[in-house]
Image (cartoon, rainbow, N blue to C red; front, side, top):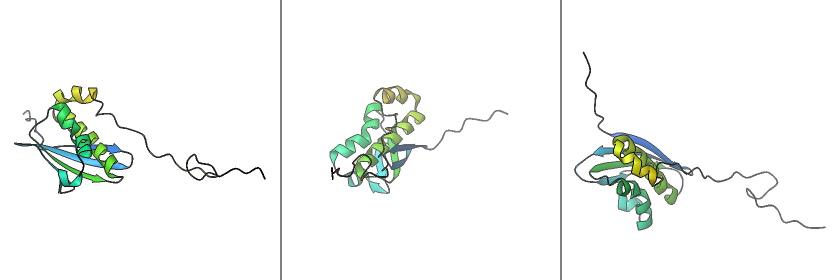
Length: 135
């Protein structure tokens, strides 16, 4: 007997940026609703710029009617919004194959690998050296 393919109730993906990690879960729904760490999207990201960065994959893919739930840890609020965008883009491309091309063209599926450079011994910071004196 052949088994029927089971349609997943939700799609989960992980997005990262600097030291922030976002676990994003999307579920098909009647309208778009976003919750981050059990808080409203507008409460968690207070500025319009942060909301634009975090919600960009939904606009690019023209995805409507998805309930988005995210758990974000680490980093600052700016890197958290970028991690959310990365995770959301990955989840949308998993959920529907048609979304992958526009998301990839907008470079939302690429992980931004820039992280803070480590401090080296003999230096004050990663590149700043102590003041040099001749005598």
